[in-house]
Image (tube, rainbow over all chains, first blue to last red; front, side, top):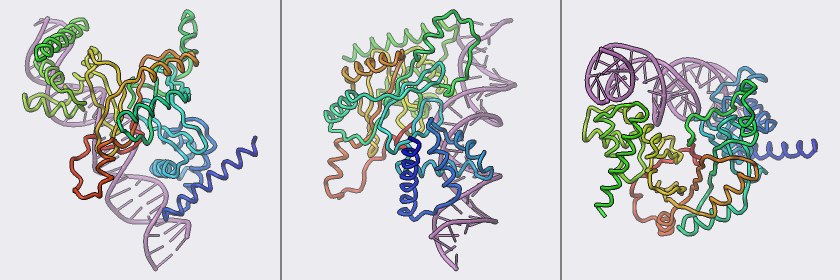
Length: 174
Length: 174
DNA sequence: TTGATTGCAAAGCATTTGCATGCTA
DNA sequence: TAGCATGCAAATGCTTTGCAATCAA
């Protein structure tokens, strides 16, 4: 299991180096570090999230470099941009990760990943109907997750606990 | 037909006035004008689009008021926010307009509205599976529309024509 | 050596807010 | 008259850019 992971990391690192080389770019310690931390972290990361994680290891890395490297990772096919509606761009793993969509709890900010083959099929059918050739898509549902529904149905005894991870400003999110 | 339209406009204006009254707000000439122009325009409008249309009728209306009024229209249920991925917020008619989703051409910027009962059903099923209670959702597909595919298959004789309405910076759009 | 990379500061952009003035109810 | 609305200017928040210094190939 841990071995499997190590192998995967290795593969993703190779992909990154490949991309860098093919694009005539250069390998740097900053890029290595940012990739390393990105790979290790399974959650959805904003540029700033990642920036702070990187800071812990090397306080000399700047915000700008994290932004630029995340774009690079996206180009290389290792990361994917997602927006949940709080104005920030988040990044999730893309390589070897099946496509999926998101449910976002507007109460606690939790993000649920899901996949439905049927929805994908019907999307393709709709596209075909319009002669539209889709390259990618984004499906997001906002609402209340099971836990928050449960919490709300209790008489609100406990003072509201954790902070929302994603503070949803505009419900229709970006 | 024109009559039907006039009646609909009337109804939407009433809804707006109702909302204003119930919220203890005030009717102003600016709000009237902005609503009027919003109703007349069928396309997706950004705050700035609407601002310029309003300017033509009354150069004294400020940007801020347009922003604030669009929020008001949204609250009243007359407008709905949409994002296509160019960083701006667009507004479309909501009252008496069936829910629909969007295909966005990354070539010419055209936006195709579509609706699929099957997709809606499967979404609900997925939500139920996770005990998630959805309030709303957003499904967008990016790709190349039929016209642009056709244009591209011709040898590119004509110099590229119209400007994209939506310039898609990041494909994954907001 | 050469040109890509970095990080700071400054700029961009869409949107929001503070506040004095104006106007509706 | 009370207090909501307006519009300007300034602030905000995320992201990008200019640029001199640094560093990989």
